[in-house]
Image (cartoon, rainbow, N blue to C red; front, side, top):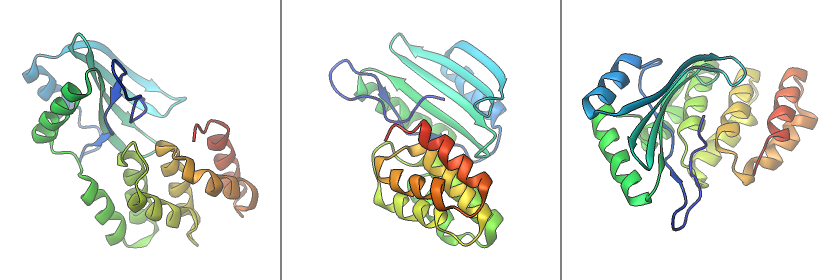
Length: 201
């Protein structure tokens, strides 16, 4: 899956945040949206078990801009990511996509975490927030995901550990290092170490 928030600067590839769709596996809605836009299909694959992607579709919108749709089994999210140049064009298309498919807004992602009751609902909201967090560090998301990593419930901690793997903000590195060394659940310690080994922050 394309990393949210690509390089900035003249000629650099700009990557949008991951736009989290409201329904798991929103294939029909997304394919209809792409067909209506006349997007050129360049890739349609399923079952990348290693990365947890059960479907990935990429369209070329213009010679310099591509749109990726991915269904991620670990987070339980379906997302759209736009990448290309120039940045202004990418942002304009993102706004068009938001009007067309109505993904979760940043405010809604945060609110869902705050309102969640019980480990299952909280874990789902935390994973969704991690997937949809902005590319740049955002303290609102940081506070909520960090709280999940420190939860008394192991399922919520698991969700928090994997949620921060999507953002890969440098500020999360100490939390991952702590989880990899002192987390009481040995499986979660392994998960944290795996993520830490591939962490770019």
